[in-house]
Image (cartoon, rainbow, N blue to C red):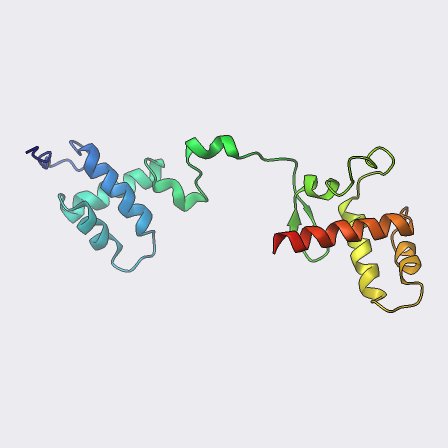
Length: 174
């Protein structure tokens, strides 16, 4: 049988902490973020081998230095092994309802065969299309002509095609 590593006791709280104790401390700091009721009692219980004063001292040092996983309170943390799957494009733009949309999503609407003949839609044009469609609901006579008039620089056919692409994207996400 393999014996567990003995707990190392020290009068200096930052010295002689085992890797297992540090791992438990980091995990406890993640599980019980600042503001948690009786946080340090819970963190001390998870570490299990150190007095609360030592746990508080080392825990605060690790949070201040961003050590271990305690930096999660600074925002969403992505593990390094998953970073290869993350790509950040251009700065986001904002739709008319205030929701941010990545710039690359706006230009995906053009089909490959018509991409050379048709310029990509901007966020402002998409916003104008949506506003015009709200102004002229289904059943309005000559609806698409009126909608196209509300979108400067776009034809009736372009507006209809862009609407179809937007609708298929929305339905595809459900």
